[in-house]
Structure formats: structure tokens, C-alpha cells
Length: 260
Image (cartoon, rainbow, N blue to C red; front, side, top):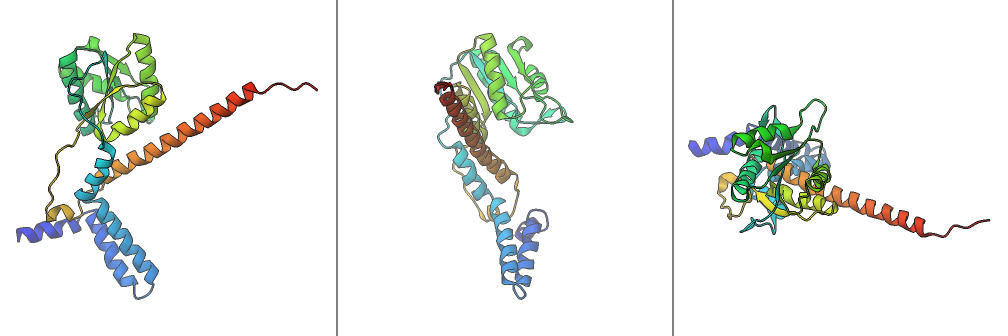
């Protein structure tokens, strides 16, 4: 009875409920429209795949590939990127980043830049909220610097660079979630910064799966991973477009003027 309950309950709640409806409706529509039936079944199976741990872990591994926690980290400032807040409470991702940043601080005793602004007009800037929690974890207020203007990862990099230049920091340690590090490094390097990556919540253990891991569970992990992959593609397109425009502008400046 216990196994029956565990096997059936995932299909009574989203996203498993949607999977069940789509597959059943697809089988029903097969009699009337093969294409409609196939589309429903394929959509249901896609949702199923994106909601199970083996697929989510594979997507996550692609984002974390090559990352390592530095054995002997060295730097003159810790840069912690915000990972979101709910009201006045940091998200789970932000909490993981805080733990990593505080661990670094206790070894190096260098300032921490907290980067995160007001993304939407109805929200709050994240940096001041994160700073209060860092202070509660024992980081002196004098060692916490706020960057509260950025709305996305690229703006994190741009505003942090200005803050580092103002305080003459030259060797930053970048703390963000492991899945977010690849895109973050892309943005910071575009701004001519070369921070040392210190990934938070880096998954290194090889997972073992049982039958329950193949039941519909949660789309949150896949959504997070796909958001990062799309973000990486978007940033690369933006940077290539900027480089092309700058190259054209440079060519225009070098062209000789023709007087009639």
C-alpha cells in the first residue's frame, strides 16, 4: 500500500497531473486526429522528463562542469551576488551564497561586496536585506559594501567593477550559486574583470537513483537550468553584437574624409 501511494500521488498533483491529462487526452484524440494525439502525448512526456531528477541533474552538471572550490582562495574582496529574496527573507540560493561568503570572510577577513538591486518597481533592493543577514552571521558592518543598483547579472558585473575601482580592489573572489557561475563569469570577463570563482552549493557527489526518482516531481530545477542556458546564449549574442558595432564604429573613425 505504501508503494502504491508513492507511485500514484505524483500523478494527482502538478506537474504529474498535467502529464496524466495530456497523455490520456492524447490517447483519446488518436482516434480523431493522429497529430493532435501525438502532440498531447509528446508534451506530456516532455513535462515528465523535465520534472525528474536524472534529467535535472544532467542539465545542472552541464552548468557546473569544470567548477572547483579553490583549495587556498586568495583575494582582497569577496563579491557575493544576490540570489533573490521573498519579502525580507533571503531565498535558499542566497542563503547558500551567504554561507560560502561568510566562510571565506572568516579565513581572509576582507570586505564583502553584496550585489543586488531592485529588479521590479514593486520589489525591494536585495543588497540591504542580505547585508543585515550577513551582519547577523558575524560579519562587521564596516566590512560590508552594498551594490544596490543592479537588476541582472550583467549589471552586477558593471556596478561591482565601479565599486572595486573606487576602493582599489584588484583581486575579487566571486561567490554565486554553482549553476549561475558560468553566466556570471561570462559577464564579469566582458567587463574586463577576472575574479576567482568560488561556487556555492557545488554538487560533486554522484547521485544514485531509485524508481521514485523517475516519477513526476518538480519543474523548478529544470526551469532554473534552462533559464541559465538561455541567459548564456542571450549574453553571448549581446556581447557579439556590441563587439560588431564597436568594430564598425572604429572602422568609420579610421576612414579618410572626402572633400568635394
